Image 1 (cartoon, helix red, strand yellow):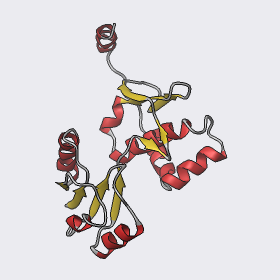
Image 2 (image 1 turned 60 degrees about the vertical axis):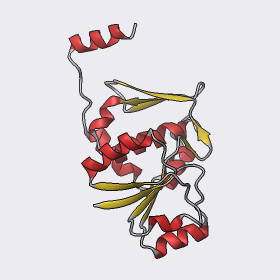
Image 3 (image 1 turned 135 degrees about the horizontal axis):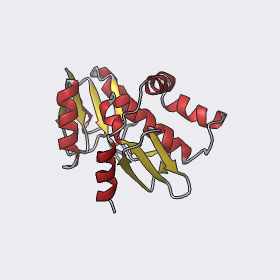
Image 4 (image 1 turned 120 degrees about the vertical axis):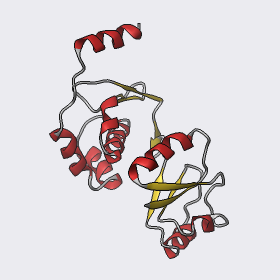
Length: 180
């Protein structure tokens, strides 16, 4: 079991992370306080910490986490390198794992990612957020992926090697009709 100190917890964080923890053998220690030099000790005995955008992850904090045996610092935010999306939603797609509109800054994520390992969702989000900075898949885009997720090619291969499900026509009709 991976013990994780979850700093700057919001009430809306708990249900989804508790559910994820149950299925992935992670025990969360939810903390309302922000991570900083004064609160770093609350992670004692944990294998990982999960921090939010206003937590302080200074060199002193990282050094202390290392001394306590913390092996992972997970960041949760809605942006990448100061690139924020203007909105996102999930939708059922039969040809893509994700897409974005670079003009509006909106991102769509395929609902079928819920059936995949968490790393796949992480990759698709990174990929789409990177498009808000770089429109094409050229060297600058690749550099962003390499810097942020060095193993992204493995995850992309896993997604490309898997098939997208197709819903029965009747379900698609009801789903689409329900959105009118």
